[in-house]
Image (cartoon, rainbow, N blue to C red):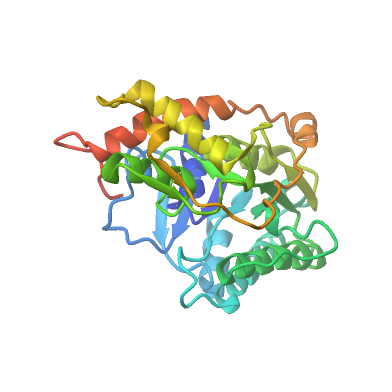
Length: 326
């Protein structure tokens, strides 16, 4: 299978790229990340047969049309996202990328056979909390709002253009190569480097945790087996509060790097109460993904077993770490 991945240097995108290459697929990764800068999460795929990366802006419509027409992908997995900070985030940027991808796919499908058209999929990821469930829209940050707007545009415009599209929903991703700014990474780094972590929301927020690798496998399954214009939810049944997740990670740290003093890592978490009601986890049921897509996740505990060793290696790297640029 030939798959074009946008945003393939990101946390989720790199997981998708690695999984596709393990399957033996051909992958074209389009990302704005500089080609001369290291991408640690893709350090083992540089120069690998069947893999190529183009440093480019997905919002360039002429470029995307030309690239997709030449590469002739069987699927496009669209994973570009706003930057980590809200500063400077505007809806136009993400919407331009969404329109560019849909229009390029539309042009590609106009040049292939009917069988190829029906088999083609444009797959994109949606954050379950921003996907429009319920009567009252949630209050979102600028970064989350622009991502949600782009996702909604892809779902509606692709249908209007006749581009077979599948939306994949998940909530809280975690796993190796997770960037700073996420609860799991920030908690572990703070504990290991500073000796304390402040949980300032009372720890009551509930999340449906899933590893990036499991969600990546779901995206790939959707690219191959999904019904067009469908939504699939991905969950491993790991709904936990932030506090529960923090306590679980501290327990793993107690085994991997026990403290020499009395007490454990849990004692180093400071909880600031939150007077507001806890934010509930989105209701995600993965039965359809399992039945229709054949999705088979490794599960929550597999991800937990990998995150601590990865982070300890990251904080104490070997003399010659494999961080080569592509």
